[in-house]
Length: 326
Image (cartoon, rainbow, N blue to C red; front, side, top):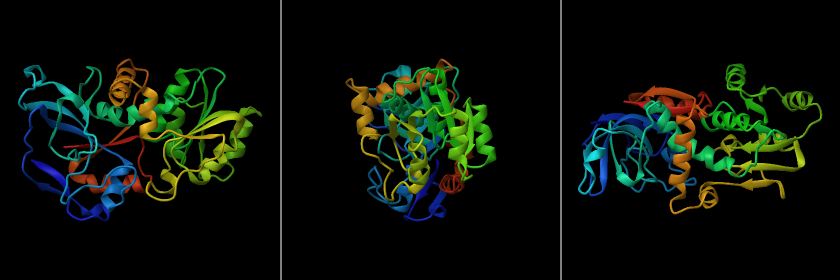
């Protein structure tokens, strides 16, 4: 098979497209002919050798990537034959191997893809979608809610805007540059604002007419977070799920006592509850997409151009979920 391999930590150019051995499914595993592989901002930090919130690869060379969708083409011992030929999507956990034409994972991680979703949409929902479902657990949204979404043109931001609008909230989406701002407006935000314009907070206040924000969904941190939190009601909530604006492996999010709540992975899982909370969030995300209530934005790159996809992510040159297609 062909795959993207990382032989040394460093810049995006260290991701090379090459031929390597096909993975073999072990007991309880399936092998997937990959049609779409998700790319996450965390992947760029791991590529550089930073640990971030996930373990760095144990050994090099490695095939990065932890989200795949495709067709089951081989079964390991003990796996029911009904899986063969199914369109499936899976999050590989901390195991790498997604940037490839073939990937292996435990059958317990696999979901059948709803008929009305394509492979790229499914892979967006299994990672980005489940995160969005984990985030919205912490906000009781309704018609009285005023929601601010920094990075509203990103993969998670796109879904948060849609979810909040479905709940009847007034939604302000922030994005960098006129093209992304236009996408946020088209996605349903009541107001889309370019955060590269220093006067953006004043534009938001004028639009709201003195009405304060009640929720800020913040995956950015830094100055944008500071300005967003300043828009909040005294009883508002600053829900923090990342800090991409400061670098995913640098510093930390902007936090305010009594206002900010960090809801990173383990906290989301605890809130979801149940015997397998991560799978619960994945099922919710796929169900929302299958019902047409959430539609992920996807930006596609050929598998061979994984380095270009990483560079685009790092320079904020992407819109929506980045997906590699073999």
